[in-house]
Image (cartoon, rainbow, N blue to C red; front, side, top):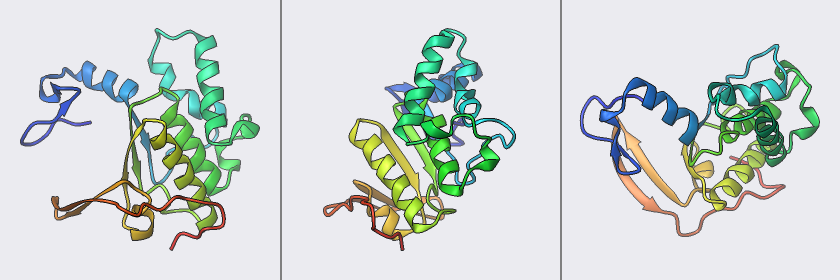
Length: 185
């Protein structure tokens, strides 16, 4: 979350232009989760430690609560059995699920996902879309960037952007539901 070069960006009715650097950092850590296309996991660090990372910036939460949050985030993406694995020992789909768990661990209201299926095979891509749809159904706002029409059809709303401008804003009437056996195209 950067400062806009023009215009205003309101988050929960507050203009982010008025936020101090510390307020921006705190907002990023507590209200927003990020899922990167390239996972951005620390390679010689365990799955548990990768998911724990955003919590290390919040000193107000006890280690007992942190452990519970990490366990719940890993369970939400089906990775609780890989807790002690190093991230460089995981498949691409597993790495993306750990990246989602890391985004979830602070219980953010908004999750930004940049091409979350772009580096994955079809089966792993569907599993990731199932997780993101479930999170959305549970009340999380998911802002997903994709160039894949098939992936976009899993959303409730599609904004098409060209050269930095919104060229269409459509509600999806026949939203796809990610299901096992479906292949991303």
